[in-house]
Image (cartoon, rainbow, N blue to C red; front, side):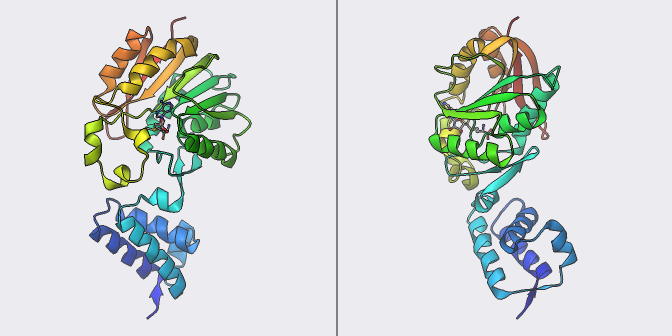
Amino acid sequence: MTITLHQLRRTAEARLREAGVDTPDLDARLLVEHALGLTRHDLFTRANDPVPEPDAARLFALVERRAAREPVGRILGHREFWTIDLSLNPDTLEPRADTETLVEAVLKALPDRSAPLRLLDLGTGTGCILLALLAELPNASGLGVDLSPGAVAAATENAARNGLAERARFQTGNWGAGLAERFDVVVSNPPYIPSADIAALDPEVREHDPLRALDGGADGLDAYRIIAAQTPDLLQPGGLAGLEVGQGQAADVAGLLAGAGLEPAGVFRDLGGVERCVLGRGRT
Ligand SMILES: C[S@@+](CC[C@H](N)C(=O)[O-])C[C@H]1O[C@@H](n2cnc3c(N)ncnc32)[C@H](O)[C@@H]1O
């Protein structure tokens, strides 16, 4: 029996809903576009076209992966973040929309976006934060550091993928240890899940994001303690530090930055109303 594009999409959506996927409509659309090489526009203009059986089979193989709770970004191998598109690998966290809160807060705090700023991103993963900032700051350049060589490889590829390779550099390292340079902006989205909470995370996160990107130690704050202590030596006088935080961690992280001698520069909420990022300024 021939199935139309519209029927194929609805069948995929129903399967994902039955499997308990949160966003079955969106995920079915993304998988159909990917499997059949179609645009969003095609889905409307070609809704009644018959779909060849091999194409339908290719789609349903992907739908079953999603039904088994593999994230859609992992299946596609890339995802959009801010204005850029990022490839993923098993060593990278899949960037979250919440992390755009940090990008937006940092951009708002910069008095001159055309300045030749030097940026540092600690725990860069795909490079998402650094690359999103560089995409908005035409004369800035930056360094991304990650403990994981696989993340450094992904971030390097993502810089090239988004035409930012000339202004972005990536290297392995343990947070800011051994860095002799000073930066105008230091950003980080470190691992912040308390170790005991990891077993209860959704399978999409627990089974597909690297543990190194999630585990923040007993109270979730291990990495913040190190980064806050290092930040004064990494910042230019009056430089800006921006840290993403987990739910309920903003006051503790603001306290760590203040304890390291930074001036408070604001706490920003994500679209869900959760305090998601903390800014501090180095002394002048
Ligand atoms: C929560 S993920 C954030 C990744 C990316 N910045 C983002 O926002 O999607 C934390 C990152 O920190 C890295 N990481 C963990 N421990 C580290 C360490 N000691 N030094 C440097 N990076 C580390 C992990 O490999 C991971 O890429």
